[in-house]
Image (cartoon, rainbow, N blue to C red; front, side):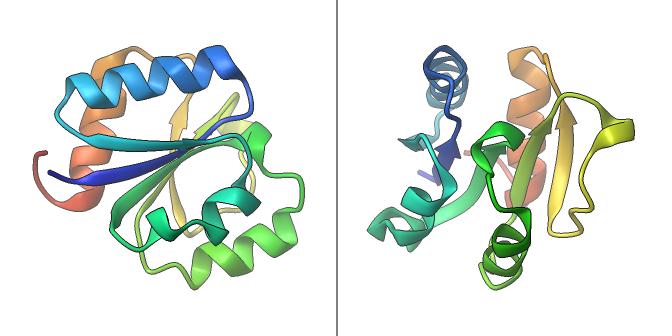
Length: 113
């Protein structure tokens, strides 16, 4: 089973993402902010991260942390035209249905759950 760390400050969005990923066979570790995720032991076994753009208060610091992470990142953004410069991530446009999120995670980790 592949582990995925999910970071989203909005509780409803976080629960929705967790539901979709768990339904797809992933074990999910939810967090509200990226700082909590980066300092969590759960980052070690995680195959990938799914991060809502709203969870990142400091893009400069986050870029450095993501660059050194060595894991794929799916960044959920409100607008692709306004997406931050994030070469460390694959961007997925919100709102989305479950299937595009599952596909993005599966593609990021190179297989299925």
